[in-house]
Image 1 (cartoon, one colour):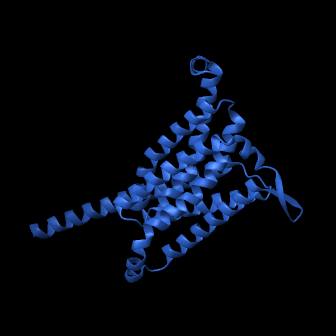
Image 2 (cartoon, rainbow, N blue to C red):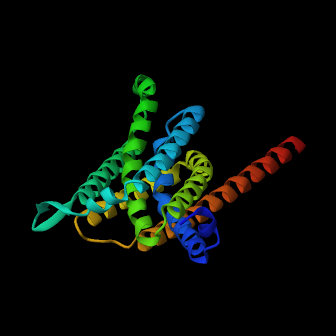
Image 3 (tube, rainbow, N blue to C red):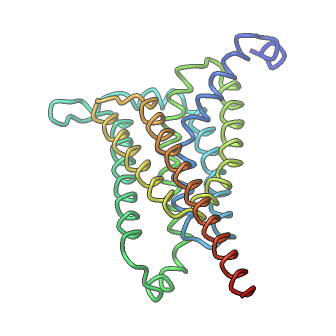
Amino acid sequence: MNIVALLSDPAAWASLVTLTALEIVLGIDNVVFLSVATAHLPKDDAARARKIGMALALGFRIALLFAIAWIVSLKDPVATLFGHPLSVKDLILIGGGGFLMYKAVNHIHEELEEEVPAEMARAASAAFSMVVGQIIVIDIVFSLDSIITAVGLAQQVEVMIAAVIIAVGVMYVASGPVSAFVSAHPTTKVLALAFLLLIGVSLVADGMGFHIERGYIYAAMAFSAAVEAVNITAKKRKQRARAEAEARAAGQGEGV
């Protein structure tokens, strides 16, 4: 189908809107991981890592779209575990989910332990390359999941590419504010790590043949985020009230 015919096809536009919305929702996982992975980096390095991560996410997705036949073949069984046939796609999901679970648990452990400045200084030089490497691994996993969904919803590669470009653009715009918010509110980082752990479990379950609807996961994430927003608002109000009380007390003391 040529571009003119595609642009005048209502079905193509409907596919684009639907697929773009779905890709944006699926991209939430990517944004959460980017926010957590870059949290320990200096501000400039964190911004650069997010740009690299989003560029890689876009590149991987477009490359996979041009390898649709190969993507379909990834569903063919290549191994068996406990009587359940596993495809290459399943193995990638299990590996990626396991990696996410490891990173989430490891970061939670770091949050609970006291930071050692000397160790942080020694790790600073290698931190950026390690973060980019982790982003590459997770981008591959999320890209595979995203493109398999896209292939099932749209027929034209052009529509898929347009949806992916729009979705990655939205992800890039959202990644900055989300990362800044996580850095400014340490408690939300633990919540984000819990989300990553949950996402990792769902990927491993999918690879093992136990599908968990993403809608349940996103609903739990939204509810937890809403509760955390209430906690942050309440904390700010208490801090403001305390500051005003201290200011009044100081003023009365000077008056005496």
